[in-house]
Image (cartoon, rainbow, N blue to C red; front, side, top):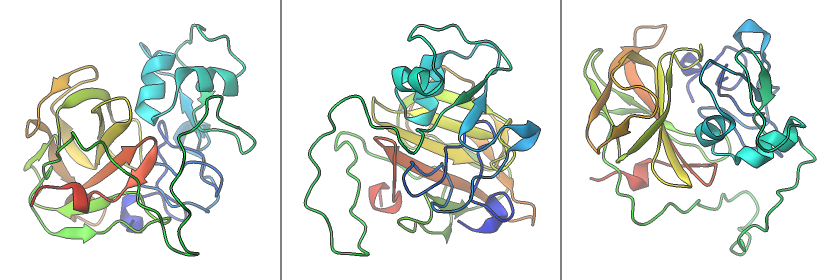
Length: 242
């Protein structure tokens, strides 16, 4: 994505919600794979999350598209561990991590240099979260979303019905951010808002205003919109209704 929308010199760091960035790990929302992991504000490195009051393992896992039991394993915690505010947890798999459950069979590998598309649940229909020009496009392997331009203060809307799993301002690189979970595998993220209109655990409907559009440090108004299916970044453009 445009460096205006991420920490200088590195992929967009979700200071509280970033995932470990390397070729073997899942790239973060808004990030670029293959770059050194940045250190977030407050000394929390990329790939880790500082627990906030009221957080649970299951809520944190949902926000990252991970399984609560895996996060417990990565942090050497019992499955039903109680976490406390201020605790720092690994939220991205270590390079040596192998999933504990059998993964679905993958389609035949693509030719070298060609990215395979990531399927999204066919039952989900996405609407545009804002109407405006696409300022930044999705680039497989390099970015994980798009930037839709607009006017500061205009509504940012939920692309599909779901439940808010993150709504906060603790991610410096994203500004006020909202993440919505639509089912067990699909989430959408909306970054760089000026004001949040929903809170965590709120149920939202498609087209419901969830935030007001903000601007980047250079005064360019827009929303950073991202889709993940099974924890993998998906190009939002083919999924959005015309």
